Image 1: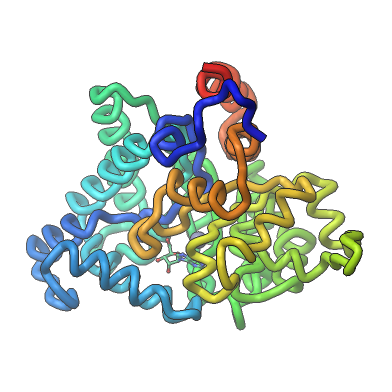
Image 2: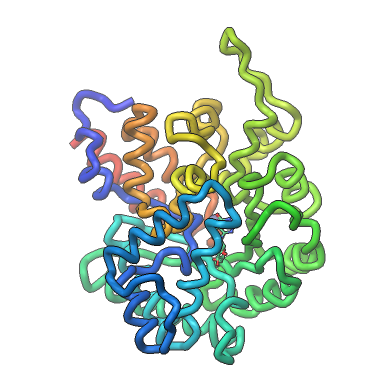
Amino acid sequence: MSTSASAPVTPAAILSAPKVLLHDHLDGGLRPATVIDLAEAAGYRDLPTTDADDLGAWFRESADSGSLVRYLETFAHTCGVMQDEDALVRVAAECAEDLAADGVVYAEVRYAPELFTERGMSLDAIVEAVQAGFRAGERRAAEAGRTIRIGTLLCAMRQNARSLEIAELAVRHRDAGVVGFDIAGPEAGFPPTRNLDAFEYLRQQNAHFTIHAGEAFGLPSIWEALQHCGAERLGHGVRIVDDIKVAGDGTVHLGRLASYVRDRRIPLEMCPTSNLQTGAAASIAEHPIGLLTRLRFRVTVNTDNRLMSGCTVSSELAALVEAFGYGWEDLRWFTINAMKSAFIGFEERLAIIEDVIKPGYARLISP
Ligand SMILES: O=c1[nH]cnc2c1ncn2[C@@H]1O[C@H](CO)[C@@H](O)[C@H]1O
Ligand SMILES: [Zn+2]
């Protein structure tokens, strides 16, 4: 709860607060005008419109389908224009700039390299281009007075059978800023255990990974991700509420899996607006993030796809403030939860918490 001496928790004040983002897709965060420019440059002719405002609205409306599978169809157009080095560098640089402008101080941004090979780029060249773009964007943000650091996660697509190859790619580039691995794409019908060899390899390599689980499918997916695959974090993980019973008198009972997730402090990369669009939750007020926060699960707040969901970290936090009445202590808690759960080293995480996050919120809590 905010104290009387604190700054009011307005959207503008939230924008100024330091924030941490763990779950954001590079190919779900392009500027609409950039999609149009890149389509023009590459001779990509399938865009539904070449007006930037209309295109932004088209992405938001098309993704608002109530189904993950249909939500994912919109990525054909972003991936369609991300097939050469210049495009990848530009998209990654703009991503870093846009996140910095939103007040994000540390972000882990993910994408699936296998989706950018249509015009012949190699997987290694794709990773190098995106890394170069992130570094350029960090420099431009610094010139504009904002410090941001971006770590990269490489995704393998659940429906393809390339996860070991992508896991090896992630390990090959770990000293250049690839900090982890993920599997993404349609969840139903593609359980995480299809990729056991990749997860086994990553564990042998002391590498980090998260898994999209408990979004479009329920507890078995979360259980497999944790207990068969060894995921350190859960992408979304919202369906963990299926293992929590709240009685009429308010008494809460956690099943064994929910207890495990809370006891082990497994980070939940929650993405409220995205979940409304894919049908995983009916409204922000009814989103399980309210209950999970109250029960002190390790909740983090994320964007998933800024283009398709028309959101930023600040707007997601503002929506939670409005729905649940959160104050600065709650927003700081989400932010520190996220920083503690990042895939960079302990000392680096601690430095951002002590030198950036805590002083940033202290200014807002007692100005
Ligand atoms: O919420 C999600 N759940 C599952 N897969 C997703 C989600 N958002 C995006 N992608 C998928 O991840 C790929 C790599 O970035 C995207 O191309 C999209 O297909
Ligand atoms: Zn996602």
